[in-house]
Image (cartoon, rainbow, N blue to C red; front, side, top):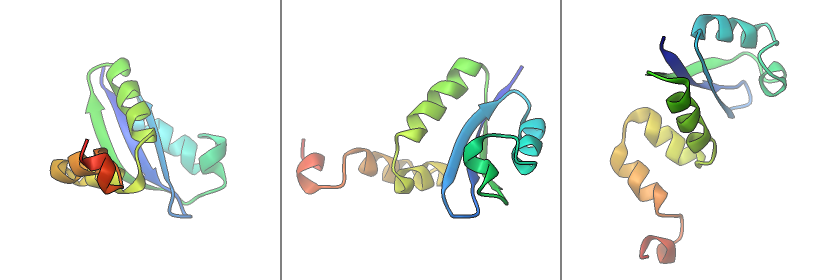
Length: 99
């Protein structure tokens, strides 16, 4: 069974990150306002990034990582720009990047 990590863009421009074993069903729940409290008041939603993982553990681990990242770093991740992800991982301030 494949598990999907997904990133949604909400109507207000914010991102919602989740994972599921049935993406179509989960997206339908979000669209109906039953997916979660956060997205229920921020519809319509747009799927920006679905990504498959072999196990729920892998999908959940990546979900938790992404939830701690900045918006810029999430955008770089979705674009596959690993150089930018690496740069952004080092912090916003010059003294953080020099360590």
